[in-house]
Length: 355
Image (cartoon, rainbow, N blue to C red; front, side, top):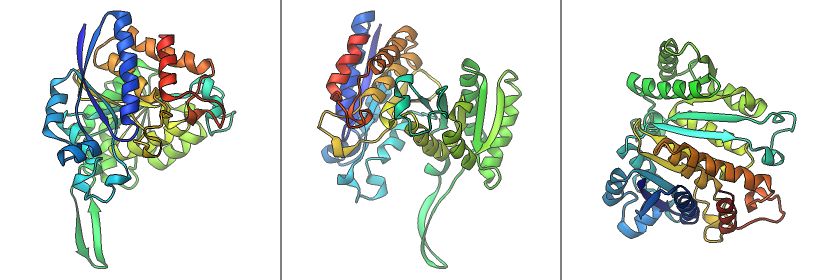
């Protein structure tokens, strides 16, 4: 098979980790007789410096023509003083909207070899955990009406949370389908004791649950969910929640896996094309030093093989290779606790060797 993949390397460590994923995909292609064609496009701060905008039209067009998209990271202190509509991070919202990506899948798994890296007590994570967070991606407060105005007490700012029935229904169905393929348990997270958007969210979740009688459903307030993630993470299977709550909770979940450098993500639109990226940032403080952890990006590439190309064996091959490398004791700097560690390129080569 022949696949065309758009590469958005971005800023900071983005070019390094995307290059690692490309090497792994190329090795998988050779092993299974697939051809992956890669085309690079500018995004984020790199695009600002080159084109004057964080998301050039050429990048959007290239992504829409590709079979799928692999993204590194955007942003950095160099561009922090720019107005909001010109910040590198604005490109992320723009490309997600342009591609119609409304679902973000963020798995948070504790690998047995990394239990010692988990900040939680050993008795809490003795059985490990494997959580899939399904985050709504194109609605909510990040896309609502916002602005600055003069108020009763002087200058004030506002951001508006808004969700439609359609937006809630489509993400909730994705979550129920995901739960049905896993352990048939879904936790819907909201703030229905305070927010009208959450009350509509909960109402629609319960309506749709009638279509999935085999899936156990529970409601949970977001503040309680934040506590339960560090108190008893194994109680969760699939979580579905809004854009902002999902953003915060998935970052919390990443930390209890041992390192944010371990977590991939997939952003989907209901079709085969998706955008795949690690959930961590651009880490400008370590950019260019060949010490970044490439695993989250490599696992994002594995998700691409599964969700966009339906290459289940090839995807699992990458996941198993990562597991084997970690079980052998190989670590990047973020996982080494001051001990010996592999560089970005060395870790990439170890994973390729295990394919």
